[in-house]
Image 1 (cartoon, rainbow, N blue to C red):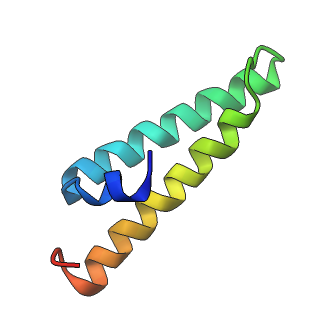
Image 2: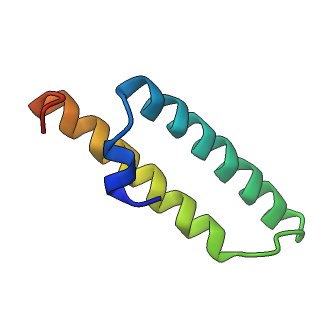
Length: 67
């Protein structure tokens, strides 16, 4: 997802998305450990999405929902 798509979500939806992404990252790392990972680039994509969500949540904390 792009940052603009994440910005359209509410804080609660962002928290849920963050949990989903962390769970997906855990599963991907587990698959990598047992050599069953199909697309290793997916790990970096998920990590970047996690960073985007955290950045947007922090921005909302600092500047409010109007930014």
